[in-house]
Amino acid sequence: MKDIEITLQDKNIKPNLDIVGTIKVNYTGKYDSIVLNTQILGSNELMLFTSYNGKKISQRSSRLFISRESMPQDKADFTAMITFEPTQKHDVKFRASIIEQHKEIESDVLFAGIS
Image 1 (cartoon, one colour):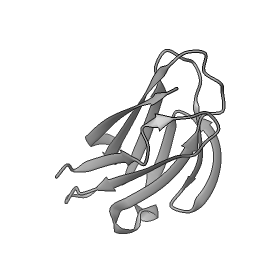
Image 2 (cartoon, helix red, strand yellow; image 1 turned 135 degrees about the horizontal axis):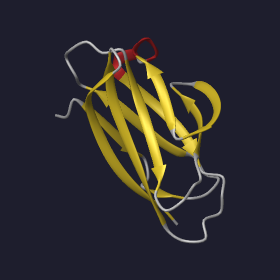
Image 3 (cartoon, helix red, strand yellow; image 1 turned 90 degrees about the vertical axis):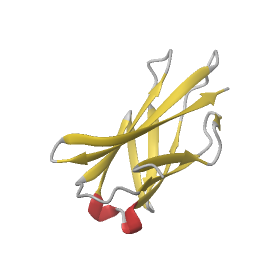
Image 4 (cartoon, rainbow, N blue to C red; image 1 turned 45 degrees about the vertical axis):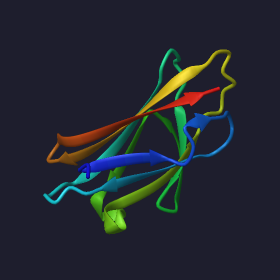
């Protein structure tokens, strides 16, 4: 079992539809937060994060910060979306990291595609 694991309901991302995912932390040591970084490869566009653990947000960013206090059972559910119409196929990199005292302890990477 990984110390941190990111999963998506569907790895085939469509514009203007929810991207639903979960980050699960299995790390037994101390940590302060997790950070989810996203990168749309071959594009300058960013994701729009819409919620995590039931809290609505409206942040167009490539990064989502979630404090440990906001993660019951060391789990975070999130939704995001892309709001641009791609003119070509893009890969999307999701990278979730465990942070303790401003240092990355462990991470997991997942790739999806925009079509």
